[in-house]
Length: 440
Image (cartoon, rainbow, N blue to C red):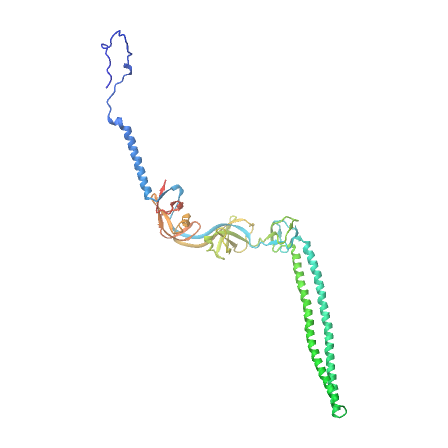
């Protein structure tokens, strides 16, 4: 209701108390509908109800799933049917199949005659190690050898001298025996003629027996002395031969002080500085045989069990491709990898350098009409028995069975069909839930 306006009749003229006219501030109030009065509250209530419905819908979706993961954290791949090539592709480095290392045969000062990178021939002198101690030891042992040679010669001379004396002793015993026999026979005949008494026969018979015993003893002593002389000579000879072996070994070590290239090739690396003093068995330098190069690569342990010596391989580098084959596979695993070497089929390509990087591909298996999917961490996480298949906004856990695997694909034996989409990365966040909501 609007306020009543005072009329002129009601307003006294020349009243003692005058009031200011407020008609300019008055306004007419119009009757409004309930919608205009409550539309803002209704709109807020509608918005609140819609938000609540969305929250309830999202909550129901979340409750129907075990968890929720953002799509950005996942990687997907589509199951397909086609050719399956199981191979190994890796980067390798060129190494020499023959790369001997030269060591110091004794402590001393080393002097090099060849620099790293020099082309050398087999037997070429690459340097020397000056070892006064080894040279002095060789001279001393050579003097000992000469002394033992003299001892051996003296033993042979003594043996011959003693052999002469022993022969004389034996011959004298033989002569004494013959004389005793003759004297006894003569005395016996004289006794039979009655010229000599019986006592003489008995005496000569005793002398004969004594001569026989002496001859037998002389024969035994002669045989024993012969064995003794042989033993003395053999002992002197063995001592001389043992010393000769020691001298030969020292001579070999002295000869090894001269560093000679064991193969034709190129000086690889010098491990010590020129004129440096080194200890025995110190590595000095390597020689690389460039005529026999191989490619060394490291293969994951899961593939290494399928590698075999003689398996064909393809080697790429410098814009070219060469045929090769597996030459060796290391029997040990280091940091989850196995070292293998691939040799070139035929002649070694020209222009390759030590430690140069090349690509190697080894085909392990090749089949057609196989169901495959891109390989990802899900294979290792699920141990090849579980995969999460995309169903709308959900990833559903499914039992699968995998077969062979290559670098980028894995064979699906059972559980998946071509055209289905699989989460191949990020499944570790699913925590083995049966259904996972894939968020935007």
